[in-house]
Length: 272
Image (cartoon, rainbow, N blue to C red; front, side, top):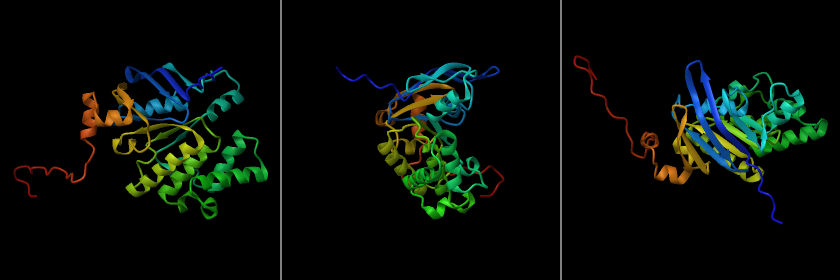
């Protein structure tokens, strides 16, 4: 008898969010296979970050469902332990790691705190897991003993990734996770993320406005505009032959080799 098909890592159905009369997200459906990587792209105000926050449990949807590994999110009356178990399944990495890390807590303690809360690890077993996580993201003992201010932006983002991976989540939401980094550091973090996905089979939901980096990380892509999905499909197909005019506009706005900003014409009576 053939093995049963494993449940989707993430399944989102009919997700909607309103703020008064304003509809921020309207009927979003998403699905990510175990070990898959889905990009959600769009310009500022498209609804992509609000969608990510609802999926991660940081915003309450007006309507719709979020399922992880086939399981729905516990209701607000569920026991704390049940809500914590579900929270382990999905973790988030934010754009600014310095804002999301405790500035007064050393890197090793930051990750150890998460393990102490969500696992049974204690003592030497906990210390070994912290070292394993730091090694996985390319950080050493010197950096483990440092405060966030002593690290570079790329190193701080590595800490944030290690902390998110500490509880072995099913889904990792990356909200503009490389947007604040320079190009060379972006490339290092993207390479790191590809390697982690291959090793752990964690699924990625990659939120970004930057189509230039999507093809390096994600298998599939959805394009959001004014709270709705206007296009979806395999990343290579959508980026090479977009069908929606909005997607084409996004692609046309990506700087290419040799691109130069247009020179503006000075107003009459002004000097250059």
